[in-house]
Image (cartoon, rainbow, N blue to C red; front, side):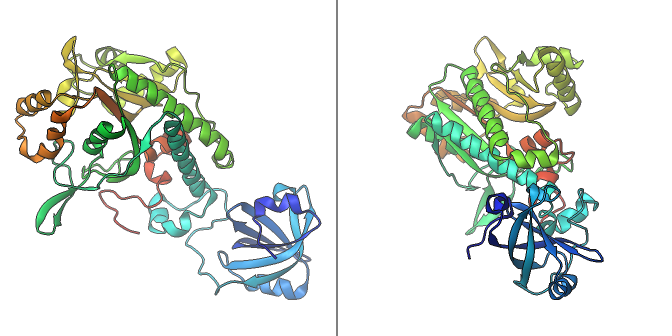
Length: 428
């Protein structure tokens, strides 16, 4: 008999079926016992009345893996309106050691640190696994949208010879006796691949050795990177980003509707045209001094509230960041060279995306590095490619975990990350 999932039970009323999963909970009443089975499809209620089977169920511990064979009957009070009766129960392994928290409760009562210490079992809780299902759907929507626009998925090295962002916040390692670094982003490589495919994207890990111990930072996270050629300026990149976000949100609504319901989340609407303000205007809106070189988290929150109040939008573009705060490969605004053709996208008052137009002329790269006192040699393999003809291009990167955290309302990005890596955590 082929195994089915609990979510398939309504289609088998009156039939004998085989289920397999984990003992989620046991409720032992005087005349009847209930075994709630959890599998990849959800929960199934198994009704036990036979004394011998009841004795088996009483001996089981939560999280023990079992097989159940029984008859499906309708019961409006049961999960999905059906339950399994007259079962046989067979353990598929030894009795499980129960985790240090109850997975059957609606909310995990353990603190986040305890959950992360015991992540392999904490992630079994519906609230934790729901966030990961949303994450998977978001990535699916990201890929599908860009595939539909003629982009090619690429895979670039995660061990590099020089830092991407010209900074010190890199993880250094020994590469057969030579210095190397974990990649801060696929930035250089995705730009070079524009010279091959014109439009590329990548889904992969990036590493930032930033000493942040906040609810929004991780030392390793998943970056959704996009780069496209033959752009007029950064506004072409912003248009692709808008469509990409709309595709991600729509796919989450379609493929992760059960996970959204578990968390009580409604997906936001992505406007046909996301409102945009220049950096100088953003400072005024946020009440920041005009000399401020960047936006602080408090400024971002104020801008998010303004966008929702004035435009009814959870999203806001801030364009024209000062060149002094952008990487050397950023294209300046021809009309205002002190400002960039770059942007950030705020989602519910938190920076979600950084992007913009890049330099594409070899001479401009040499000048940009010289202006910052940077030697060319560490970037020689990257900069040399621009001698061989590169189109005007630009791109962006979305932090997946931060996107899911803002979407679900999680207070800490670690709540939506399977095995987070940060300043203090390297296990499990």
